Image (cartoon, rainbow, N blue to C red; front, side, top):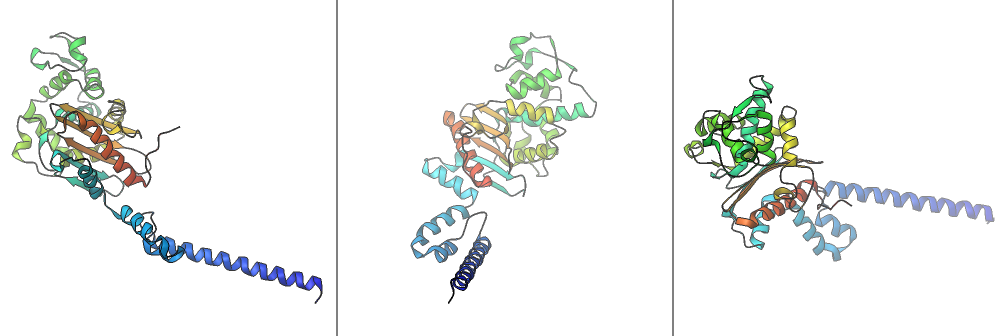
Length: 316
């Protein structure tokens, strides 16, 4: 046989082999894609494609991905000796609206988390023209509570612009500003009644008491409302993004986050929205003392990995 013909035959065989490999690769890819669940290949596919030797690792990999968010959080709490009764949460996928909860309807001490729906009420009043950021409110002796800059800047009897009160309320969690604002709504019970507009869930009598109690389920509804109407609350969300950087939801990971924290006695609480490719809301009430802020941050890291499919990496 002539050399030219042999070359042509070899070339044809080579092309045939390459074509076969491409087809096989495509079929394997399609099979993997079909078995893929939430971005993770099934153990069966990995084992059948790459050999039985990978079965054990593949099963572990698959089971970790299939584990729900509630199971991941509960496993974290158990591994760290934390009683689930000391952590109430409501976490919502803001794309699918799937919600994950633990004792979320239990009313507990809210600390300064109440200031989030309080601020929302006033931003609505501004949008409706009922008041403006320049509207003045009188600082009375009954409004004083330690914590925040308002009582340091002003004396009893002074008048303070609403815009300044709202900024101090959210960024610095000013307690005196909180008293001024909810007292001007008619007091605590009137304030509690007004904020039910952010949730369709009926609340218990305890919710409407004079005590500063809320539940994670309700706060989750508030966050969902805030996210759905974010253009109306642009200034509020900007202030939330400046509140307590590096703490609470940001104590472990630092994606773009809008949060309102609360601290009182053993309670460390937070209500926030974590932005990014897959945004989610997260409300956590904890009675863990000083360690609560860190636990909140670690639970948020678990949530970030669950919703985004990757662990948080510190930006370079």
